[in-house]
Structures are given as C-alpha cells and as structure tokens.
Length: 117
Length: 114
Image (cartoon, rainbow over all chains, first blue to last red; front, side):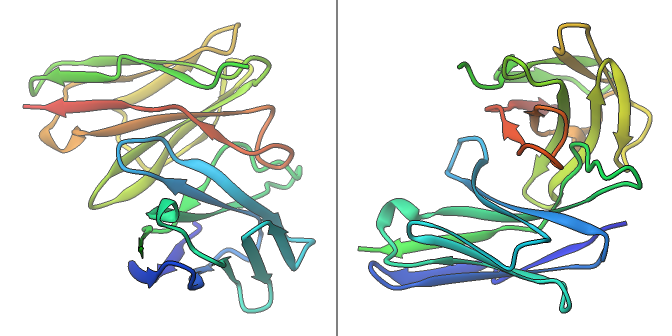
C-alpha cells in the first residue's frame, strides 16, 4: 500500500522567515495530495491541496509543489507568523481503476512547526 | 453550513468493554471516513462509507467496525477494548470522495481505555 514519509519532524523558524516541509510517497498511482494543519487540541484543517495534473499551487502565503517523477511534494510557507505554529500533515490518496479515491488518505507523520516572534 | 459533528467528545472505558462513536457529516456529504490518531502511529485510516456501504478498509482488527445510515450519519464501534485503543478518533466527510472534493474533519472523540 501507500507509504508517505514526511520531513522534518520538527521545524523552528523566526517570524518572517520561510518554512518548507517535504513529503515523499511510494504509490505512483497517487493523484491527490492535501496538506492539513492541526493546532493543539483541534481538528486537522485543510490548508491547501494539489492534484497530479498540476505542478504548483499557491494560496496567499502558502504554496505546494509536486514532482511526480520523483514522487515528492512540498509545502512552502512564506512570511511566517506565530499563528502558523501547529502540526502540519501531508497526505496522499490513490484513485482506483474507476478514478475515484474515495476517502482514504495516507498521512505523513507530521511536522511540528514553531514560529518564534 | 455546520461542520462535521462527532459525539461524544470524551469517553473513558475499561478494558474489555465496547464503545460506539457517532459522526454527522456536513450536510450533503455522502462519504464518511474514520481515522485513528495516536502520538506513536499518527493518523491512520480505519474505513470509509458511501451510500451505506463500506468502500474501503484500513489495516485494523475486526474489533473495529462501522456503519452508515441512509441520512449519511455514521457510527463506529470498537469491541473488547484494549489499552492500545486509547486514541483520538476522527471522522471526516466529503461530497463523494477526494477525487472530487476534499475531506473535512470533525473535532474527534477522545477515547481513553483504562
């Protein structure tokens, strides 16, 4: 089955710096890659996602890049703020023969991001 | 539009007991998935239901089961509880599956087994 590796496990940056989190996946059939942010004691919230027919997607200070050949994707956060501090999870989902991924996501182990004021 | 609602928020059970968790998806969402979150194993997929049918299942023992009702609400049941079942159980819903729409998570049920 699918396996997702996420690095680094912890990341500490100064406010205003950029943060990059990287993930690799094993199943070449994976075609949907979301990123979730989970604050302490709260639910995971989708912050950005990308599908395999796109190489890059941006939403304000957040961007995701996908390299299908190398089977890795990355989250980029620019101009970090203290409120960006949280655990970030990458995930991958593979479509079945009918093209539907259903609701199964394989998650990375998470990255604890700390942004120091 | 209301988000994914899970009840109860907290549960304390004893080894050997069984437990039922409930999930109401976002209105109009027909796919409901369940995940287990623990510090050691992270987020792991349990199963997914669509139109009252289980479409996909993760690598969990048969003690973990679920079902979905005609109104898309879902329940999961864990029988013969073990200490290792202590975890945050998250429910997530999407319109019909992540091919077309993202997963939205509920706040979870924190299960503690003593």
